[in-house]
Image 1: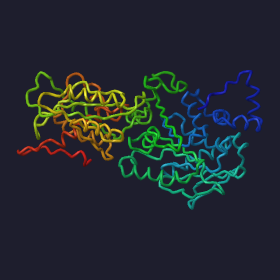
Image 2 (image 1 turned 180 degrees about the horizontal axis):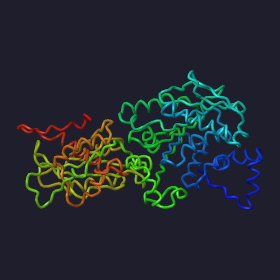
Image 3 (image 1 turned 30 degrees about the vertical axis):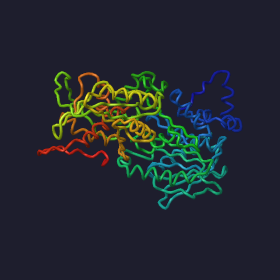
Image 4 (image 1 turned 120 degrees about the vertical axis):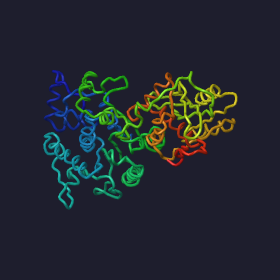
Length: 495
């Protein structure tokens, strides 16, 4: 939605001239997609636009941005703005695109995108006047696969996941705008093999089809922490795309304070609550409106599995102390947290129990501060005859921290997750939780427990991941009992 043009006395004549004079109209919208939308798509504007819409318009207008990944809540008008309106403005306006390709997950979805554009070209009077007649290309079954606007030498083509467009041309033009809209669903992200297949298709078949001028606009929802959108997000935020300017934006239905992101449509939090009641499904609400990643339809950790200990009842027999550490490098407000969870291990085999210690670390801190925190935590936990074992996720720059502590003679081990996702790691801890062999203090672990029970819905899960790193390494090194019934836990590196 663009801002509604208010017909005051001062602008009424200009507005009327824009609607009736083709030359004036085309000049008015030539450089600004934000002006194009209210003029050509005014019938879609039921509500006043929001600031996030204006940001989307600026991103779409900025040709220096070669890759834009936009994730927005259901009903935010993202597909109308990007997959329909922007495609048409990119042809009519200053960007002068000649060969647009729209990618969708299935042929049926792609045909819907093309049908929406066709509907505008047929029934939108202003577009019909300004873009002129068009023809269609069809496949052997008679389904439309492309629209040709001969007057402008423009082609709008559709293609679905798995199809190759490498080498395709429209006359002398290779694709110069590629829209990628909802190319994944909850089934396609379930396995790493399927996720890899989609991502490899994107980078191996779709991106090479363009030129230096080609823009890629990716639209969708977050369905998995290793999905295509999340991989692109990480590449953009980690600065891995040095040769291409990329941006990533998320627009949930409410901000972190619970305020509606689109006040024109949802004036109050109560209006958002009404929308939630219509949805009726908490998982769909979390995934498609709050933009929370839900990797599974099942709860990983059930509240009734959380059991507590009273520190006054602890007895002698502490075997070892371990700390699971999940590091984050950024201090930005939207970044992940550095999390450190301490466990005291008692007993062996099936008699082993892990007592999680209160007040785990969960902060946004820099590399030097992380080092000091770990040293202080080890010093605090270390007892006269006990060494403290550090388990640090061994990814990226974190390897340097592992090497630093090794040189300083700390008992440290880098933990390679080898492509396993957080859900899998946490799920492997649940047998001990259910058996009451992982215990929590009565106070001091509220946030950790909240992340465990709400895993998949909570905005941050860093404590949960540090917890899983700790528990799985303790399981791996749990000495075998000589008696029957020994617990033989899964090896962490076998995940």
